[in-house]
Image 1: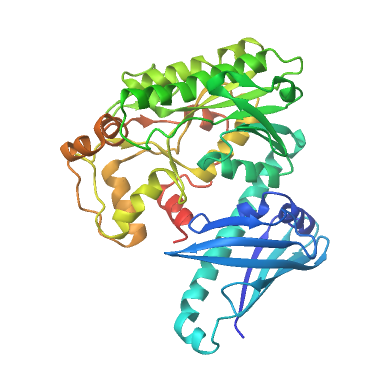
Image 2: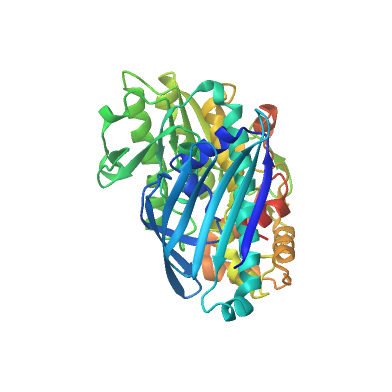
Length: 455
């Protein structure tokens, strides 16, 4: 039977690495972003006998995978075995081997068999081996990166952190990252509270203020998706209200608490700067013109009640977030994979981007770094033109990327939204992040794309 083994030396003790794997959120952190996986049942931990059921989407098919955790030795290893699923056999052993007091060997061993062995191995063996290689490279990379980030702020101790927009693209990964780092995550949810959640109804101006007492930090990410469709006047008002009105409600509430959080990290966007052509801007630049700039100004101004109440407020002006499971990159992938990608308009408009993994690190730094306050540009060090972005994505996917989409077609199909999001841009510099010593995992575009896509 085939056996796949992946080993990585890490500068963390075996006990540290094991503890990270055992916490809530680790399972989500170890799920590759290019896979479409949904947890149907199962606890977050690794207790022996614990059962997990997953729905794994592969093309038009949805595969049901049921696994059960086996033996566990604290600080050294644990295992899980497929009970039902796509493999004829699957036994996965996670080992944590000490290499002195401050280092360890992380080893994943998978003993598996494909259906209809050995015929299945002849048909799909190479594909499975390649997939396992992609999976464990990502898992070990992410384990090391997360542990390094958590170690940097370990002296601050675990915190109680409220997150709005927790089910969105950014919030989903952020909550898993914070939970696996040992923090208690409370979700701000519409439509009623669940475990570790607080209810609010921003459209009605309602929030459970008493449940917000005693928080250490708040991360506010909630807001309508601005790229979900053409902008009618009704749609534009909904986008504005979802950001400005909800932020004002939250910040008024935080300001009135007896035990206020120490910090609010609130989302904004590089749209604050408007269309800037080729000129570079940092946090000292003024606001631009246009709908997005106006929304961002009002969005940031809505945090004033929290700031005036003595809460440290960080307004993150977020660039284009690169993530395989959603956002701009996910929308680009189908045409680029078909070889139909290329520049939009003249392709000279700048894209100020950031890898989602680095954005999570920026939010963490915003929570713990007392030097960060006010506007902070959450972007990679080097913006790229739309044309260069397309070329790099084509290179990573090994596809041509020379099929242009004329500006007139963009405006015809997408209207004002297409003009603002696709044909305009800004070259934004992360001046304050760099001054604070933020360490990027993916400062370059190629590395960010390859990690997200497993390529």
